[in-house]
Length: 364
Image (tube, rainbow, N blue to C red):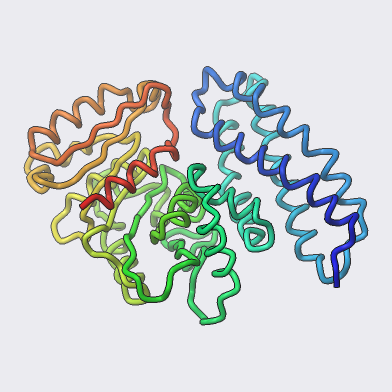
């Protein structure tokens, strides 16, 4: 049955501004610095407002029964996007607690998760879930379109193991849909920040993983943050088991197992990644600190270890001087260090560094 013209027109009117609003939210998240929040809101608000009329138009159209999944999903994602963007704008323009800004942004992972099932149906959505530099790669888009129709029973896409958002200690996994069932895949293990959740942080890496054919494992800490506060380390053995489980199902490139993380996740990436007998070959901490426990013999295992250290000059939680100290300590310890100090980065995850991290990870 052909799709009614009114439905195709409604979709064509809604999808582009929806993706533009989401792309602007990517930009806002990357550039969030509390003193600049009102300016970011001014750039975001028009993209949100541009959704209201196309959304109303989509709600008015009579959709065929066999397209109700698309309708319901598209409307749900658009409404969530409006709620998220409006919450951010209100928080940025008000005099409330700065935590409201981060609370609004925390919804972004859920919005992306809700949108992702529409990628096989809409090329524009599929391209949005690629690195910007790869969106015009017609061969890649065609491979992903074909992969959406695979019937070989392969477990691919966004998967979750005991990782509902009210649970701790589980993990989410992204497996590229274009995987042929045999190729060996690099593995990125991405650790969320304090009070975060792996199911949300997964989406910080899906674009690059989908573009390049990389596994992403996004665990959730067993407590509200990782084991960085002293006492027993309850996360290291759990991470080891998760990687073993993934490697039983998918052929992991054991020469390219990256541990990365944001904020507390970065601090723990240092602490766990430099432990003896862990499977990580590369470390890429972002916006964290070198844990004091490592300042003695702990850095001995940093010798010849590839480390990609990222920090923002505007970081208000861990001032950039802490990164300078880490750079000096790691260099003295003999690490193969790449140091990236980013002038306009505050205390937020720099998704635009992911392509560079993967280039570095995949280098011979």
